[in-house]
Length: 543
Length: 45
Image 1: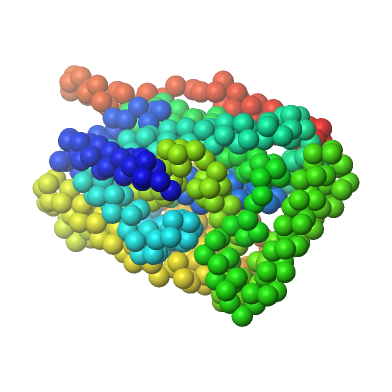
Image 2: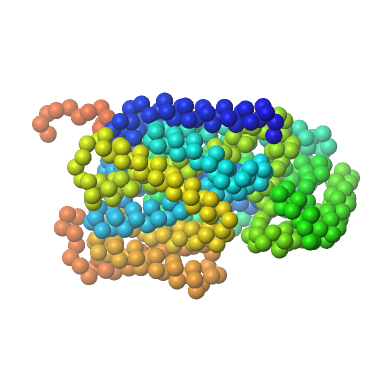
């Protein structure tokens, strides 16, 4: 990474902080600070929705996944358009007309304060810890790639993000997301151009596709129906019940504009994700003709090469070098069978090397996948573009976490501070408390990120919590929006039952994939909630 | 109710136009993408 690249990165970070400060104008009222006075255009909201969903791990993780396994991951996004259509027809008009600040505020109007507080509390716990993980995962990767210490990397992401989110509120978050999406798309497109120009020096485009296809990277089996059913519920709960997403479209000018913002994701998300995954496949083809490192995490590579298992590791490296040369020859000769066999041996050697790293470093969760694309960026891209792509990765980390931080502060102030503690105060007081809450949650997220980075088990606990909670949140919103008979008591105990059911499934029925947990949670909440509701008199307001 | 005009902001907020064509278009595009990926995978397998 050369001085010009650092210059690009510093200029970008400086720009988003300065622009965040500029966006703080007009945010002296709660409506301005938390909802941008409901004035944002659909395209800005749409880009913000996508930026909040797309973390840095989406860029480095999915390109790495495509490098090793191909395009299969795309099926996880198939349910998204259908979920967006369902949400546009259901929750968008409800939330917009209700003029709420948080999704959970609506639950009090429909049920009671107990249901609202429970839902908001569940959101706060889950999102606060997952925000730490959202920051930790790219920090671990980028600290290894750039040779920075982990705390420094976390702070490089956190300080600008906390600064612009705290000062500018939701407006700064949304407009920064817009810039960040452009940076990400431009950076990925530029990387594709560089990859193609490198590949086309050796083979034609058609031959490149044949090589990727020969190793199964273009022809994975798509399990469309199971992905559609389980995944749709996952998307519904994320985009419909998670304040970090709901708050994005609450800032839109109207119901139509909020719907259009979700439709933007429905149109664009799958092609965008295909661009990212295709980049990963192209990195694979690129490295057929350019020698790749045996392992992409150079820190571990150096550690193991000078550790007690160095001899074994050096032997693997020699075998790897021979096999890479054989694979290249087979690819150039269009020897399909020889190429496939050689690629399988390369895969096996990399797997053995990863095993040595896991035992030598003590990092049992080590996966080489996340280091593939950052290594490609820093070693193969031209000067200037390296800085831009590093900025794109940091941008993705900031945009995903900025929206979450903003949502955490909103739920804290609106659902708890204003609802339970200080009910009547001036707008400037609530704005001040919102800024304080944003700053405090930001510090908490930094702390969790530094702790989580070295604890795979903590990351697992956070992921488990998410899968336990989000199906139940979806269930309680289904009761609120789609039924008139559900009562507050039914909704409250239904939510508890839903979480208990998913917890049971998680611990004692491990063969059920996590994709189904949301569906199970939602179904149990609706079933138990309705059963309890039928034992009570219906809510007089709704009869 | 009392004859006062509604603020432009509220009117804007209430804009609620059916978007059936968009929904159908989105779902058709998705089906096209899924079929194209399936065909692409078979063509280069």
